[in-house]
Amino acid sequence: MNEPWQEVGDRVYVRRHASVDLNVGLVVGDGHCLVFDTRMSHREGADLIDAVRRITPDPWTVVNSHAHWDHFFGNAVFLPAEIWAHTRCAEQIRETGERQREGVLGFVAEDRREEVEEVDLVVPDHTFADRATLDIGGRAVHLRFFGRGHTDNDIVLHVPDAGVIFAGDLVEEGAPPAFGDSYPLDWPVTVAAVLGELPDPVIVPGHGAVVDRAFAQAQQAELAEVASLARRAHAEGLRDLIGTFPYPEEVARAAIERAFLQLD
Image (cartoon, rainbow, N blue to C red; front, side):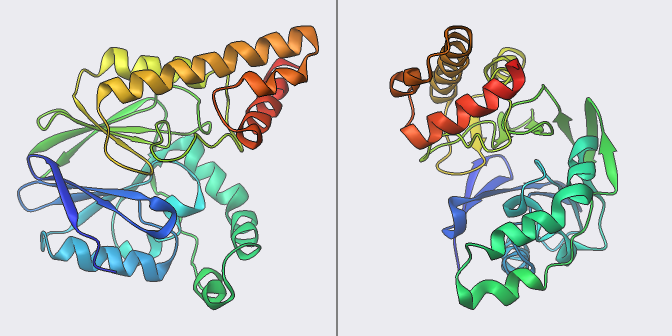
């Protein structure tokens, strides 16, 4: 596949993939490294390992940003390794992993079905509820849970000595945020908390191009507008407000349905 790495801070890299436009992160320390998300299959994970080995020969720690298939189905090929995630992420993988596989098999191209079927679902073995700090070859890397948003288990990876935030799918570039199992009323509050507490200039979204704080702030404002419109629609019974949302109708409908579940 040969996608290049982009160095976005001192020994902090992003690899953007054509497959689902996914970003994977790599933090390199002295004698150790960290891999942020593992892609959607063993085969894609193996390609990622080859790419990591072009940067460093060192052992790794793995972090899963959240419990969606495109971010953790590659876990098995990185073993043996510590795999870190939010507590709820590990629970969700146990509870929904096979269901997610069936969902992917429902839309993946025929020539990739075997690739999905062969995935060994590996659950993170190191979990936390609020925050954790990892020593990655002498570099402190922070894992933080700021609240619900894209899911109930999104975490942020913060590399303070490089000024980089890996935001996972809490921030999206190149496509609207995905609301399928989201918490639209919490999402803008969570992103505001990330931006309020972490001052760093480089923000890596789960998908799409690396962005700056201005982009993330603008998306937070859109998410706040979605939450406000959903509350108004629920209070007034006006689903026709969907046309005023800052996202396409299909995305707006998913957002409002999820918001209504929170409000009912």
